Image (cartoon, rainbow, N blue to C red; front, side, top):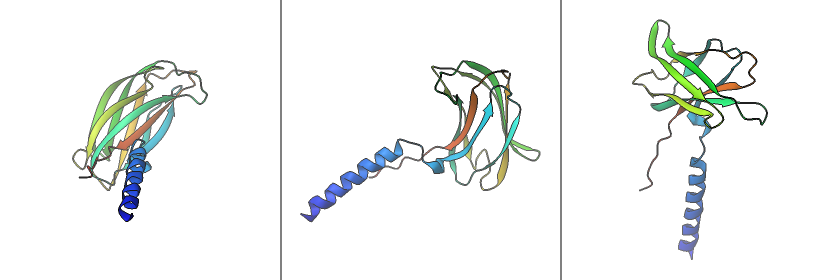
Length: 151
């Protein structure tokens, strides 16, 4: 009888863990910032990577209302640096729209390409701006979750 109870608890725990893995856990989200598409000036944010691993940067085109987003074609300049030392510098073409509102800009490895446990600056410049646009561009840095097999 006890074995049936333990087996049932194990099945329920495994089902709950797989449902939780489908969404990005909050500790995987390292940076979450927005900038207006109407006046996309150069933005700089502090970034602190506390754990080793692979990181990726996503750009998400959003609107505050439920209307579909309009198309956006831009050139993104992304710089990760500390003082005069530049760790990552990339120019990335970005095309977003109603059928593709999310794009992955860049992958990098913490501790190999960008130092851990020390604050660096992330500078993002998007050109050209679109005056009168109501969309915002959300920039998210996320750590790739490690998949551990249970056996």
